[in-house]
Length: 339
Image (cartoon, rainbow, N blue to C red; front, side, top):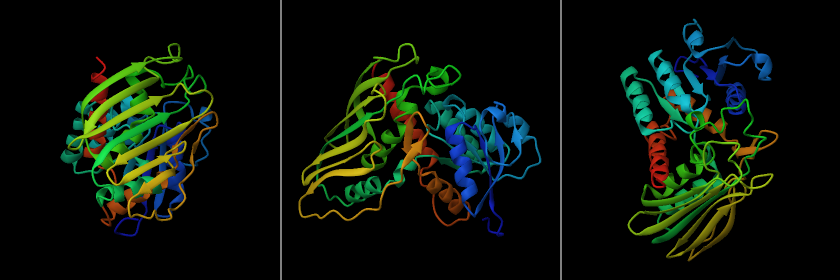
């Protein structure tokens, strides 16, 4: 609720799978109120269960008299910047689904608009709330590992014709951006959040079974350095048959090794660290289930609560616009390293 005791009012633009997830968690939060939904598709085609005003365009919503504090942007990736800036101009805070934008120039424009109009920008990186990931962040900060030698990030998912349907923006380079933006930016964010920026990047990409489905790669290998003298690699693919295989991060360091794995980086699969006993962690949230495929952890309720708490001056933003832009910058540099 606001300082005056009123609920924080949210609207959601983009009513696909993730937009409906936003709407659901907003309605489940007693401090929040869902006041509108916006999508260019007819609501009868979207299977919308929420009884709130529906608008066929963002402009029509912004011209309405509906009082709104925050607009959650869950439109195609290539439209995030445009939609965020329009909402900021109309005195709304914004929550932007990953990725923040598809290039750093657009991310800078969003940040400039937020500063100009005095509004907040929240970036959705819900995997930061995963208990194993938060624990790894903690022990790295506490220097439990000593010198970190290498980190390996593996992201092996399934995305096939059930996902890249003809009526979807997925697979379109201008709207999707590519595999690292749409599927794996969450895990690049986790690496950056824990270990910092990367440098000396080299990469190789390939499309094995997506040539007829997308305008970009389905697999890749990325080598890089980070920190003072540490090595890292990212191996990724959406060419896995039938269902997601794993999202994992492995750390090899002076004082021990650890692997967080599972399909969604939700399990500690190995922990062997000198003079250290691993604590019992809370269970991870199950992934978002979209029927024919699964997404990342369903932690959006933490994101919405953070928005509410920030607007009540109780805490700081979990993932700032500057951090969101940095992840975009890293992905941009990875793609450029293949040229």
